[in-house]
Image (cartoon, rainbow, N blue to C red; front, side, top):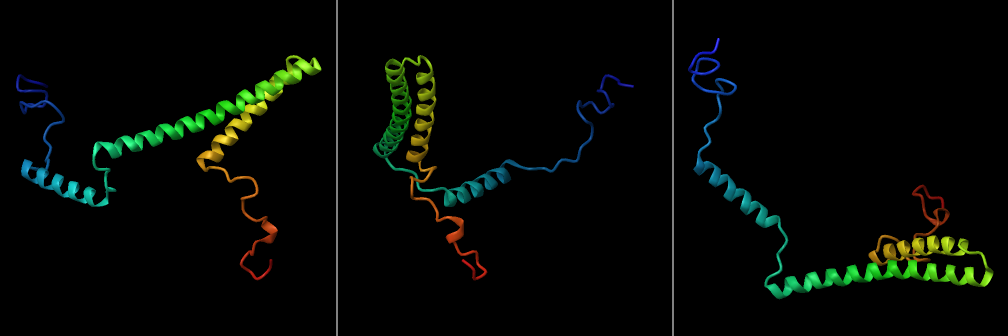
Length: 138
């Protein structure tokens, strides 16, 4: 039963007696310095000066503006073509709906092409039948 010294009679709270390793502050400091030196050798060189950092963020903003404008342009052109077709053919709202979806798809494709995630048309790999499969047959 617990007495005034604590739950297990040791005068301490918690899980009881544990044999924890004695790690001293100087040992921790030494290990921290070694880790810092190791990370410094693996870390790429940082841009020096505030002008270089601002130029990097400006390039990021430029890329973001380019990608977003290409996406918006695809959607707007699709909606515009759909609206014109609806006015001329009297098929309201189906032309707008269909071309809005096509514009959305074209905008996504343009963004992927600009980001380099999708190859340009005609720039992909050769068809499978033209490649050498490694066993001497074409």
